[in-house]
Every structure is written in structure tokens, then in C-alpha cells.
Length: 238
Image (cartoon, rainbow, N blue to C red; front, side, top):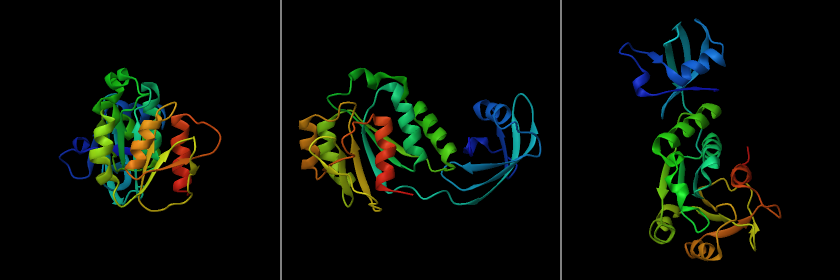
């Protein structure tokens, strides 16, 4: 936890004061070994970053006074369209994408996405928020991503995706018969990434009809959790 993310209900009635319990309290005690007087990096969800000084701490809560003065890091100008991965992979993908600055993520269906994936508790709003928070805390960011769920591939690609991707460079990661993924695009991009095994030819055809160009990272076939950081680092190198 490189940043403690604060939410509106963490603030007390006294200006500049917050009270934290639960996971964040445990992390401060067990990982940071925090004590009264220690200053930590904090940020207000969807707001500014600053510092927090611990005023009191016990087994039930920690109280801090905070000063929030700096803007968060600039977001990536990218929309990530992602075929819903296996539940045990989803958490890692959300954390990785969020920590790298993705602010709009659309989870979609595909032929190779098992129906049971959509019933997993990891697709719940609560879990998606929890994983997003972990990504922001890692990256010292505060801007929560928008995560959309689209369970019907064809209606989404035909009716919603063209408007969503308008004015952006449109790419679909595809390891077969594709051109090399561009480097350092810099500008707005919409990137589609398939499930394990990739999109089937029909799905690639529909994405290409929507204006997407198939691109590849090379001969190696990567897992989703490896492909996304690799693609983002190539499109937006540090």
C-alpha cells in the first residue's frame, strides 16, 4: 500500500480528520508498523493526494489529520475492452490495469468465455471496486476506473462500441495473421483483448467491421494477465 485511499465516509465532522478501520487499519499496523506521529501518503478517492499524520491508533481504529494538495497522476487515454477472464485471473487483471492508469474497462462476453464466469462473485461490483482500490493504492493514484459489464458480444460490438471508440486508434490484440502492435501511440486508443485462446475468427471479423486493426506482440502467446501489461507498456512507454 503505497497510498492510503480515503473515501467520503472516512472523514469525520472535524475538518481534515479521518478515521480508518478494517483492512487499512490492519495494513498500517502489520505492514507499515505505523505509530502515532508517523506521516503517510494518502489520497481522496477521485480527488487530490497529500499526507496524513497519525494522531491516535488502537485495536479499533486509527485517526489521522490529512492535507490534500496534489493532483493524481494523469490517466492513460485508453479504453480497455476485455473478454471476461477466468475468475482467479480477473482480480490480477483489474489490479494491473488500474495500477497502470486504465480508467475505462469494459468486460465483454466471447465464445471462449465460459458462462459460469459471469456468475462468479469476483464479477460483483463490490469485488471490482476492491481490486480497483488495490491497484490505485499500489500506483499512488486516486481516480477510480469505470468498469462496465457487457454480456452480449454482438449487440455491444455493433451498437455500442463504434460510438465508444470514435476518435480513437482501434486495436484488437490477436496473435494470428496480425501486424506488429504499434509503439508509443500516445493518443486516445481503444484496445480489445480476447480470452485465453483468443477471439474466434467471427469475433475478429466483427471487430474489424467496427474499425479495429488486428495487432500482435510477436510469436509468443501470452496469458491475459501478462499480455495486458505488455501491450500497455508498448502503447504508452514510460
